[in-house]
View (cartoon, rainbow over the protein chains, first blue to last red):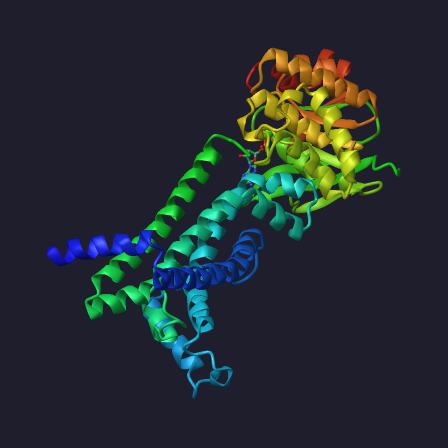
Length: 234
Length: 234
Ligand SMILES: Nc1ncnc2c1ncn2[C@@H]1O[C@H](COP(=O)(O)OP(=O)(O)O)[C@@H](O)[C@H]1O
Ligand SMILES: [Mg+2]
């Protein structure tokens, strides 16, 4: 009990004093996750829209595949990315293992199906609503996709925030492909795991506070977005 | 500007799930005053309009415009489809699709906002409008590219008398200005006020058609007679 209280006060102090290591790790976490999120959205949002608008032979199959990939255990993703990037793997020559890039790759694989699935769901509903009008206006496929993405942007942002939440809290895959190297690939989650193992609860808790803070910012953002949607403000 | 009309339907049949929805329908639409489509629920009015507009797949027959120009026709759906955008953006949308320049868009949107009495709501979310306001918006959006042909599917079905009169006035002006109207309605008074000629649909076929006075005053078939007297016809 005493340990925890001491840890809490030390953690609090680390946060308010803007401890250099804490800030460094937090920024790296944000950088890796936001980059992964950006790449994932670029892939997932148009994919979700395309799957909603375009009928083709294996569409159901592709959608089922994306939904299945959503349940992929991150640790397994980490393992596969590790094997692909390791020196003897097919992409070994790139020398990406144990770099932030490797972590970004793993996160992209983990969250793209999640974002694509939520985006597809949202855009499919909007497409059902808009279908007759957009057909009547003789829109091209590309105009339809643009309109649906733009008008569905709030729900798509929710999809992106869900992806952010999943990516920033991820530990297993990141640990495997990043290696948790000090000053290079150490991020919030891997640092917490490490410091907890070492018994340095102050730093672990401080990092935990930051992580919780980031997650809370995300959920507050989601909440306020859905409120502006309800109130019909633009 | 090349004339789209006349429109010739030849033995048009629409089947869905093994059931004949309309057809065979053979009819010719010339340039002229509005055509009003009447008939009991389920008689195929909506389907007929959608077929003419080219947004319903046909299983047999032909729909032939003298000069086919998809951007020269528009459709107003029974329950108005509004984009999740501001009122002004709803009006601007068809113009943006057509690549109209910004200055022209602003001026036409302003004109139409005033014309439908929604000037004060320019920046309001269109989804916040009442049913009547939405329908006026949908009609203005359909007219903003000054189409040669405008289809309306029971546009006043759920509206109060005042809004109905407003819409009728707008449609009269539109017809006078040279847009060809083809409108389904349940309101016989409205049919008398706006037509032109009348198409009486029954069981997916054009049961009777002709000039409005002729149809209303000297119905040739017992079914039309009964329908005009307010009886249920099947
Ligand atoms: N896609 C469809 N699949 C099956 N039945 C349909 C479809 N579209 C219309 N129908 C049926 O065709 C008939 C005619 O419909 P509709 O054209 O909407 O008539 P109206 O507008 O005169 O009420 C109705 O019985 C309707 O249920
Ligand atoms: Mg109908």
